[in-house]
Picture: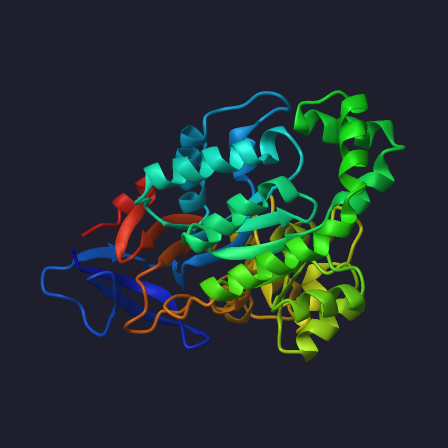
Amino acid sequence: MTGWRIAGGTVLRDGALAPGELALADGYVAEAVLPGARRLDASGLLVLPGLVDIHGDAHERALQPRPGIGFPPALAIRDSAAQLLAAGITTAFLGVTLSWEPGLRSLEMWRALMAALDAARPLPLDVRVHLRFEADNLEALEDALADIAAGRVHLLGFNDHTPSILKKLGNPKELAKYAGRAGLSPEAFRELIEGIAARRDAVPAARGRLADAAATAGIPMLSHDDATLGDRALYRSLGARLCEFPMAEEVAADACAHGEAVVMGAPNVVRGGSHLGWASAAPLAERGLVTVLASDYHWPALLEAPFAMARRGRLGLAEAWALVSANPAAAAGLADRGALRPGMRGDVVVVDPAGPTVLATFCGGEPALLTGAAVARLG
């Protein structure tokens, strides 16, 4: 591997931004610059730990940009990797929903996407799988258990959207949205979900098997859209130590009181609030009730969010950056990234703060993305 010297920039180290240089060697942050190392002039730029995204499902738009219009998973993965690097994301957990719905979130798509990921590796960044298992998807349980055991799953999320979808069936617009995603007529979708809901008594046992498999494999677990303290207690009892997108402030507070990570969406911060009318992430993060931000449905928001928080004046950029790098890395059990200390993975993003705009993304100590502006700065 080639050594690198990123010189002249403002480097985020030990929780503070300060002028300095960063050395990369043999895939890691190094104590000193190697002889003959290539130089990137980072004058006027920020040198930051790479972004760690523990829930991003924007790849779904690469798979199905319009309802009923699909593209091959291999093409979607290639496109997604390019977009992730352009957003400064060096570790990406693809939020892959394994649902009882046909089409985009089906077992068939899961199998195709897992095969495409296997074929595409090694990728220029660390791409992992966040399995978002829909509670009622009993037909897919054995596949999920096998893929967890095989090491293809790196984070398990407990999803249960069936009750909320059932409540929306009386709204023709909402019904059409779900039916279109599944490639069904509204009538067929209604018949499908009503049949699914009729077997809810089998969900707890299936959920328990998934939790046992994840614990055996040593992968973190999270709950999704916890509405009540009872929801959080249930998933905590299964071993889920991450609370993702809590629907009530008291749920976030309860998770924090138990030392659990609380995840909310970076788009919420960038837009100034939830598109669903739920709690606003930025003020909760400023109060310590949100500890991790994820890209959710929009990868570029993960880079923008810390700058948006810094502009609010309650958190400095260094402190806000922890929400998108150090904290998600810790929540996912990845102790080798999220900071620019010697011996850590050489995952680095070089950013023009005026945008903010990514000029270069280094993954494992090597440049995975160099824009034209970055190439002009090479020495």
